[in-house]
Image 1 (cartoon, helix red, strand yellow):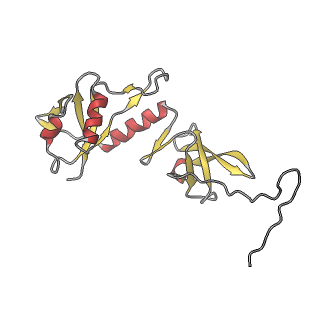
Image 2 (image 1 turned 90 degrees about the vertical axis):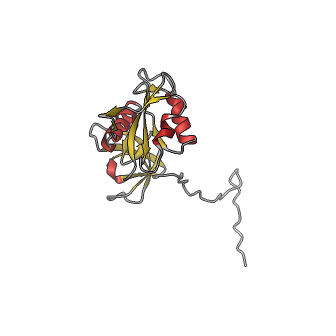
Image 3 (image 1 turned 135 degrees about the vertical axis):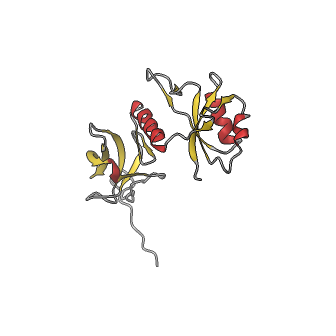
Amino acid sequence: MPAQWYLVYTKPHWEQKVAFFIEAILEQEVYLPLWSPDGQEKEGVPFFPHYLFVHLNLEEFPIYALRQTPGVRSLPKFDNQLLPVPDEVIESVRAYIAQTRGEVYARGQLFRKGDHVAITKGVLKGKYALFDRQLSGPERVRVLLTIMGQLVPTEVSLNMLEKLTFVVQPAKRPRRTRGRGRRIKQRTRL
């Protein structure tokens, strides 16, 4: 049985502590959706107060360890059985939270303004750009391409992008002068 998402009910204001404990001690993946209702708070508040999601395989992970986690009240059940939360629900919550922050969540990747991306399809394949924002269509985004030293806004499809984990630095050309117009003599090596 593959790992699935399950709901965990916590004590009031213990969501982040429980999430940290489950990730650090029990070594399970946790998703705690945080958002800022007024856009002012940096950290945000839980989107679902008292609840968080845990990704685990019930055949390999002892459920009593999760029940005995400090701050956990219960694991919600239906007909005395734990029901998994479909992956589509988790993806849609992630997409909605990202949208409220001005970010884009697609295909397991979170795009924020200023992220370095690579274009993987189309005529711009192999080019690097900066992610700017999502446009009115659900799959259209604006990226900033560097053309002739200028950032040029370009609209592309979201499925053409891949987030880079490293930053691409433009190649620097070597200095030609020492300042005040004094040329640097290029020495040839023998």
